[in-house]
Length: 302
Length: 337
Image (cartoon, rainbow over all chains, first blue to last red; front, side, top):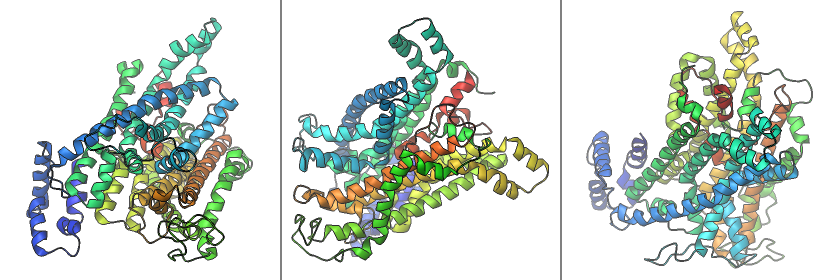
């Protein structure tokens, strides 16, 4: 389904993809050669079938920008992006859950109100604005402590110099935290007012034990769901963030490919990001069922 | 949406208390007036800016990245054009596009959601189609279309509206289902009143709360996406002045003339945060205005990707769309207990 969309948008929509890539001043010979390479000679259905076949067999074609196989170029970028997202998730999710629990316990206090207000602010502002503000504060105008761009020497790894990771990770953490935090808060607030928590409290159980043994596990399903959906959202969100910091990941690769009108690379990266998005969305549902005993055993026909 | 609008959706169709109107109450709350204070100046700048700009936005007036001086209060941009004039000139298109995309998306989404809930025979078809639309990361689809077809204003508007439709439809469908099950709607239809009239006089007034809140969330999101697209070079093209584009053009000179970046960043931040705060105040106000309000937790409005994400309502998917009520995670837990 997604592959149809991607294919239709890239090859069929422009009418003549070769013309779109080469521009209006292309010579007829160059046009004919590119049509040949993109397999534009046959009908649309057949085009799609051939494209899908070679795509599934691991051949995403050659880049139009430098004639290298697309996979070879995108491969290292995938690794870099995975690192970026994983580090951000490992830092951001515990912070979000902790803040959420804290504001649920201190409900309607100044803590609750100020975290809620900050979450509203952070959730409203587009990612690139957050990134630019961080750059302004930490690497150009106010302080000069962190590099504003993530320059990686050829052959080097993004992990060689942790300093370049700090600002992109911080941006993604700010993107992740508000939603997971609010979900945690509302799920916890609801559980904390339930009768079994009241019961545990009346039995004289310690507040910490109530929180961790009784309240948190019951609040888990919506939190897990929020986390998975958040990571799915990052499949689109990293495009802008990586572009701002010049971070050598798939998102930046996509922007470069778009500017170079490099159709095979665009197709591959979008297919990758879309697959991640779909898998995580499904995973969100599966996780919820797995961590919720009632859902695991109940039948779905009321 | 599942989480935040749960209470609001649950409150749809509930009898409303008499008193001040929803918006009037929202304006009086702290988040409401802070939101308005943030939004109004930005809108005024965007509308009136071109009239008061000291220079033509394309005019070269100083050295590239010149700092602020008497002649150029906010300094010059990367080509030596007046930053102040470009800031005053660069917001109109962003706001017009965001407003148009939001209006289109909310109107179409509301219509589809309402019909799906009111006419069960259409429900399956409508929601299935929207599910397919939602299975793809929409921001990527917008990027894809814009990169191939080219950055056209109508396409930006269309793509952003298309992102909104399924999400809006889902929330409005849930709200309408709540209204349709109320006795006054059943009574009206048992009297044989025409469907169109029931929708207009019974259903629509009772789902205005979710519609208003949804519009606010969508507007925040529209502004964010359109500014981001411009920042990536897929919005208005140079030499047009545009806030998103300006940030990208001038960020290499941030050390010499930070104003060229700070000014557009501040304006985009102010309007998105302002709209979001005001939306939150409206949501609170809608809740306070019904008997369902004030009982339980107050939903917090989230925006941006949150909508995109939470619009994957897991329980909806597990239940299968046909005939099942929309349930937020919180509600479904109650229901299955």
